[in-house]
Amino acid sequence: MYLDPGFGGMLVQVIIAIVAVAGGVLFSFRKKIKGLFSKSKEDTSAVNTANMQDTTDDAIDMIDEDKK
Image (cartoon, rainbow, N blue to C red):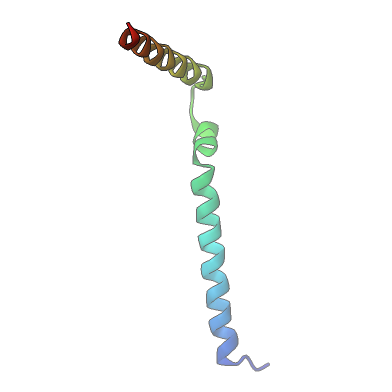
């Protein structure tokens, strides 16, 4: 069976592409993957939402003080 040099180059490109895509997928899902292996199963979304609400309330208070 004969494989020409063009096929070898294409095969190397396919392998590089597969590694790049796998790395991108792992990078984009790193928080979910890290959550699978962490010991605490704490939901941080509620904490983050509360922190955002506090920051928004502080900003509104600052604007109201400026209007006075």
